Image (cartoon, rainbow, N blue to C red; front, side, top):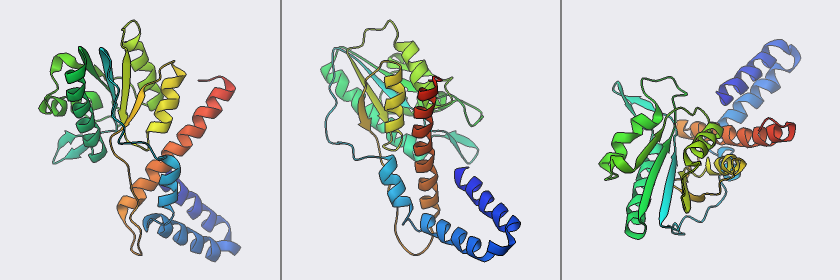
Length: 238
């Protein structure tokens, strides 16, 4: 949506500003080629997902909660399924759950994700069968299926945790979402351990690639979200 809006703005400028049509058209083509070929997408991803220490094992305590953030749903032959990045989050959450059970008395997986895309089911409900297949028992899964944004993920999970005596919190999500997620969780007085499930990489070349445009859209979304968080905090909305 961000890239589409940007393209629409360039198109409107080209239509309205007749004397500058040619340079504007050249700038538009150059910008989107740089994004699609990865040369501009790579630095955007570098800004959105700092280098996280991915080889540091999680620290489990007697009562541990693993918080997995949603990342949308998609249709595969009319069946609602998790996207690729979410599959990585599910696998990382299940691996941490298995390790937690070997070290702690109580382990819970809190899956946070509502239905911002207005599909047939919420994110949390869609991800549940995949966690069950990864040998996470239903009794240890808590579904939070009403949040529509990362901020609401943090707010609603905070409400679930209120009154629960967890000694350790582990936050599982993709590298690009982690900086904003930590800001939101800190806003509600929570300091979970960051656990990166996956990171995006730009594929540099000459030919445009759709995946690079998707990654650029994600990076811009996160960077704008971080800026929005700080603006809202400054004016007292958060």
